[in-house]
Length: 373
Image (cartoon, rainbow, N blue to C red; front, side, top):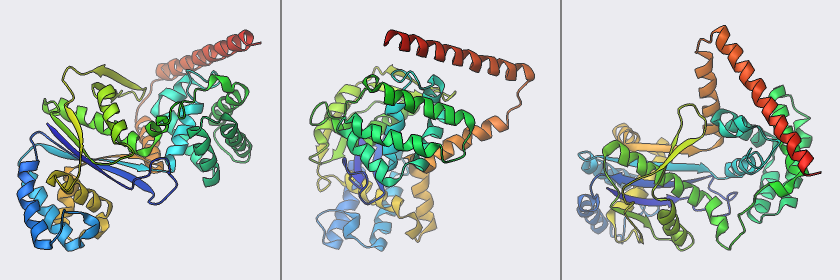
């Protein structure tokens, strides 16, 4: 199989700059799309007097016509247009929860609230509401600098604000217990974003999206019983070397969300993850196709052809990291639970299990406090 990837809304560490969303798009195909698309791409390049097909240099009419041609040519093969869309400022909130509520480090954080997606995203939406943009900026810069003093200043703000709003009692307890422990025991919180000059890159939208693309490739491999042969990303100077490193180190690690919502199951695939390289879109029609399709996906409301819009959506496999996606996850679980009939025995078992988890939680917390006196 073949992968051609490009990005839009480049941000790096500057997640509060416009545009709001960073997007990475990729054609993931069972066969090489380059010989399929190159002839048509060259035809339009010649007709329009361009050096390459680039959406920002073309009219909507031309983009639609060319995209329609590309989608038509690809209709007879197994392929998917994978998209990772990241609401850049929201990444600061996710890192806030991820770094401060990791129950394996923060003894004040509940295991279930860190490991189950419903509870974790509930915490994300809570802190997205409580922290203002300026707070998020302070946290983000401190986080990338491994500056716990700066992080602590935002934690204190969160603790002040949480007492000014009305929220569920359990959510209040979980949030305040986790934040209090982090303030009292900063040495327990691991910060690695500034360990080396390039460590910060792994926390940026660019590399978060690239990591997600690796998992999308594994998903395609599993569904179609194929293995990667060529993996090409549009050239870039800042993240190219890190992408190569991630491809080599993590390419064979497959992660899948457990149906229970409790974490991921992981394994190492047997197949080789193919050759990774960077190439200019001027040389490859498939990268130019990604550019046009990604641009259209962002401008869906401007597409005049309903047929083209439907074909694009049918081919697309989007993955969002955003406030809205967190809300959809939490609402999905609430809907699932509200439509499930629980027996009295099941409810009693659940209550007993939660009580036992709390007992274990406080037991470990007391043990830690005694050992650190």
